[in-house]
Each structure stands twice: as structure tokens, then as C-alpha cells.
Image 1 (tube, helix red, strand yellow):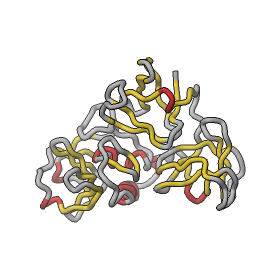
Image 2 (spheres, one colour):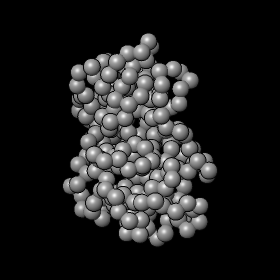
Image 3 (tube, one colour):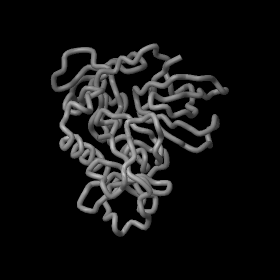
Image 4 (spheres, helix red, strand yellow):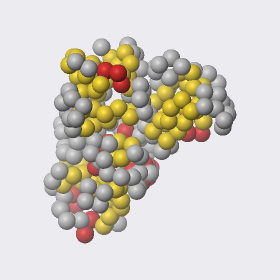
Length: 253
């Protein structure tokens, strides 16, 4: 059975209990496959191959994903009427996806996963699956770095993927996801995903550097951008002063 997230941010837990580790998050409109039921929890697999447990009440059954557009701003209100005084129905994070159902003007009408119609400022929407490799390599590399930089200052949150909080692999995952490529969500290389290993010395902008239990994005000029637990936020840092040496690097090019 397929289902979609009905809350702005839905925790994916490591075990089927409320106090379990938050291993990951899915965002509004993201689809998962329900593999089984454990009391009030569903055992799920995401479209990027990650498994965990989600409260059944945070999901809505859906045979297909009808989303047409994606939120491309930190946080955006979905309102009941298409004007600034419209009541806020929900607030969606960057990366959430919605189904636009009518003509797009200043506001776009969208059908929420619970069936209600809401309105979202069209300026903050883009098509939900942009083709990653229609761009030339240099442009795509810069887009990856620029997307990661959108999260600068965001607090570190284990398992996080939004401006409420994001961890190291959540940052790199979202930078790539928002640019049309899905990579593995954890801080290590895994076969079967677009990345391939390269020596750290040849890494270029947008490539990833993997350390012991950590991942960062290379920005060139000796700098990395990462969500670091010790620094408690997403920041740009000189690689030379980082306490670890990279074990390997990965690229999609």
C-alpha cells in the first residue's frame, strides 16, 4: 500500500515507539510504501530506500502521487482564501510537494492530501521534479552549493531535513533532491545511488566529502558547507581547520 505524508514534517523513527530515535523525516506530500503495521505505527520504505516507522495517523493512503509542484522557500503558508488575510490552514517547508488544480496567478489553488482546497503564493512554487542533467555541469555544481547555502544558520537536528533543523546528511540529501537527484540519506557511501567515489584531492564544488560519521559539501577555495553537531548549525568552514580528514569523496559527475 502507498501513502503520503499529511503533516508538514513527519518523523521516521528507528523503532515502532514514540520515544524511539528520529532516524529521518519525510515532508508534506512525500510518498512511502507501507510494508506492515505495528499497532499505531506503519513500517514504511521511502522512495529513496530508507526504512523506518511512522505513526499511521500522520499518513494518508494514496494509490498514486498527484503532486505537481514543490515548495521552494523556507516556510510557506497554505491559506483558505487567495489573499493575505486568508486563514492559515498549514505551513509547509521547503521540499514539500503539492497538487496544483487550477490556473496560477498570484496564488495557486492546491488540493491538500486531506481533500481540502488551499491557496499558496505561486512565487514560491516550482515544478516538483526538475530534470537534474538538463543543466551543464558547472551550472549544476553551483546550484548544488547555492541550495546548501540556503540552510546556513539552521540548527542541527538529528534526522532533520528542514529549516526547523537539519543534520549533515539531511543537508546534502536536500541539496541534491532539490536539484533533481536522489542520493542516499546517511553519512556514508552506498552502492545503487548516483554518487561514485573519488579521491578527496580531486573534489570540486558540489561534490561530497565523507568523514568518520559525517558528510559535508565541498565549495572549493578550501571551504566546506555542512551541518555540524559540534557547531550546532549549518555553516561554512575552512577545511584546513576541521578536526577530521576526509576518508573519501563522492561525485555525480
